[in-house]
Structure formats: structure tokens, C-alpha cells
Length: 168
Image (tube, one colour):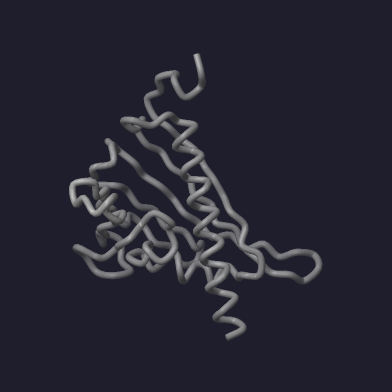
């Protein structure tokens, strides 16, 4: 039986992406803006605060993809709640509290870790770990691959932004 077909009580995993030339502080400011995910995440068309105080644990964001073929019934969405925000460790955690994406439970932690090369270069890494119930319609390997490719695209967008802000 393939790994992603073996029933498990919880899926757990971690992915990461390196951002060369972007400091951990620069990237943390982008990631910590909890309700701006649409600027970085490749599939998200809109993201905004629906409840709570911006930048404080308890804030809830609504995220949605663009409609597929202009059919409003195909909009995929989620409401996510910020559980913790630690600017010293550059770490946040959140959970999906409601969605039409097949999630029963999902909690994730995202952390920005500095990488200083021996040659004086700077950079950082975003680490994204999660624990969730198996997701309806997904295999574990497909879900892992989706998160990894999404994080790589987020890292590219964030790197471009920080480099433009540094040089422009």
C-alpha cells in the first residue's frame, strides 16, 4: 500500500524555502502581516481580516481563491485564526477554523530563520510545519507537494519584494 493511502490519525510535516539576499527581519515583517497572505501565496486572490485586532493573536482572516471559470460556486475559501505571534523568534501559528477545502483540523507554524553565509552573504529560511487530519480528496504526498511548491513560490515573491525595496 502506498504511503499516502495508509490511514493515519494525523498528518504531520514540514517544508522550508531559502530566501537568498533577504534578511530574516525583512521577511518576518511580510509574514507577520497575517492578513496580507494574498500578496505572497500563489493561489490566494483575496485575504482580509474578518474579526479581531490586526497583529494580535485571535485575529481571523478570510482567504479565497479566484472563482474558477467565473463560477462563484467554485470559490474555495478558508477562515484562519492567528494563535500566536512571536516577533523575537519570528514565529507564528494559526489554525483553519472553517473552510470548504476538506479540512477537519489544521494547525500550522511558520518561522523565519536567519542564514548568514561564511562569505558575508545574508539570507533566511521560512519553515512551515503542520499537523492536520487527513484531508478529503487529497493524498498525503500530494498535500506535501502542494505546500512545498506554494512555499517556494511565496519565497520567490518575497525575495523579489525585499530586493526591490532594498535597491529601489
